[in-house]
Image (cartoon, rainbow, N blue to C red; front, side):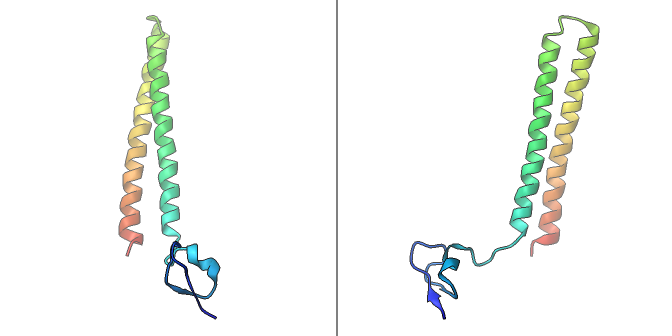
Length: 104
């Protein structure tokens, strides 16, 4: 038996075998879900890198000239910047590969 989806649904006017399919996209694919998951993961890594940079800056400002704390703060900032650069490069590489390999 075939049904026609009512107006106001995602597939309004389309013929479906079950009315529960009216609010499900016709061309569902796993690729957008994978893309979103990878983007979120890389975004979280980028945010973590920025937080590390901020922590290093606060440590640097509050070091009061202590050589050990200044060195630790500078290293923390450097590691945060390296992490941020790596996360940006990872985002670019993943998007390049996904677009060129998996997109039609």
